[in-house]
Image (cartoon, rainbow, N blue to C red):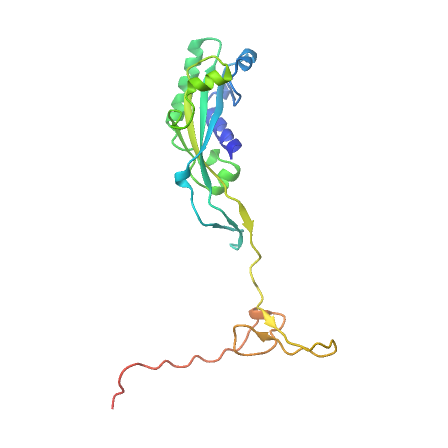
Length: 234
């Protein structure tokens, strides 16, 4: 799921015109060594915090159908996670960095959720809303200053982008649909004895079910007429 969110963010930022202008979008950690190797305008989208949203945890199972509508598996409900990214712009001059960061900010603030065209893999299969917001680091996420200290990097203006995405639950395959009825035949212990005719379960009549099982035509007794309640008229 995480790599699918990465690709959706890359496609979203590419649609804002960054790649057309020669700006590279990367997901590397912005350390000092990385900054020293950088030689082109770059927007860095660094994932630094992952936390489950326990308030959205569901229960029960859902059904997975094939193209013909048959149930092929049962899937646990998805688990929701918050992914927090540190977005920074890198260029040769601070003015160029601010321009890039402003361009990214304009795209992100106008996007409340990642569109269906940007979702791939399990995110597209689930068909759930993947929300996006510009916010602080969150109550349990480390602040940006601590992230820069841990990276031993250069403190720069940054945006905190939070994405709430579902992680697909485990799917357990189920057996194929029943197409034939269950028939019970009784026979003796000797191998040369002929088995008795089969008996259809859940039906009063006895007889051989035949090759078609319950799918074959069979006679059913007429439904008795219902009696009306109340007094009889003289």
